[in-house]
Amino acid sequence: MEGLWWPAAALLAVAVCWFAVASGIPVPTEQTVEKFGVYGDSFGKLTSLFTALGFGGLVITLLLQQRQIRAQEDDATQNRRSDEKGRYEEVLFRLLDIYRQTLLEVRVGEVTGRDVLRKSLDRVDAVVVDEGVNGLPRDLQGKWDSGSLTDKDRQRIDYLHFRNFKIVGTEIHPQARLVDTFEVLLEHMVRGAPDHLLINIYKKLVFAQITFLEARYFFLVGLSHPSRVGLRDLLARTGFLDRISRSQIHQLHRDMYREYWGHTLEQRESPPSIPMPPGRIKRALRAHKAAGGVPKTTYTPLGVRESHSLAKDDAKRS
Image 1: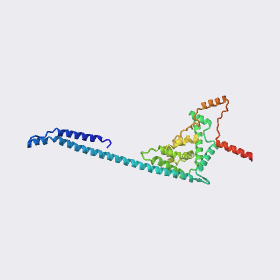
Image 2: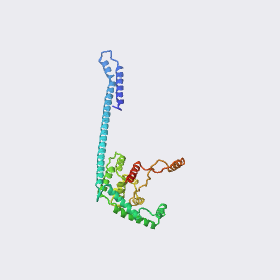
Image 3: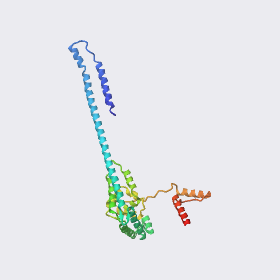
Image 4: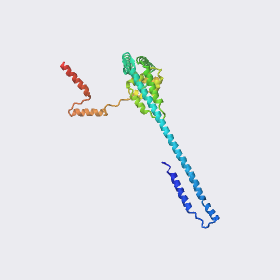
């Protein structure tokens, strides 16, 4: 009845009005047909009131039915959304479990799991450094920054790109089953979500389960394998590239990804480990030294110090 108090008030007003009108009609003193006829005609006003009362009751009935139907529709919508959310979460968490299991089952020889990815990344880093193609030479970097590259300079950069594509494409050893599973996970995360559901929290949850090592691995797979169109699209669509940008990726690979696949990875600076400006720290060190103290700029964890101390004791006893 919330919000429908006014019909009851209107009916009460009609009843009061009816009582006032009925009270104002004089009862005939002469017992004649003419007098009683006039007296009966006086109730015409009351007939109109009863008609209005019936119409008012009909209106109230319609309003109550409309309110009930709307409430039922709201409940049905809420239940449908709740069911859709439950199904989405069930599939998402199931896919996440499948991804974890698939990662554990990755194997190359005796190496399994994330160690396979780590060794692939280590090989890439070792070879590009060994060949000297892990970044632009100083002279090219200066021209790149100033925007004064010549055609010959661009051809030199093309060679760096060519060698990196060859090295990464060969050494990264894409694990097709793992990459396909990861694609399905991202696909469901963004395209399987109901329209009414905000998925940012689910993105954070999924991304929190992916280590920087895995993030860099998938990035290099997308970079070096043209056939992985779906992976590159999902990395960009889900915002996963923002997470990749925090991992250790060569600037040359970032530039290559932007040039050949059209997606930019912003280089983000890691926040300082101490929330104090460098100048303030320097002044604090000087002040401590001026007061006769010995400033310390590094700290060795207690566990490391204890293990070193035990190692020294063992060496002395031996």
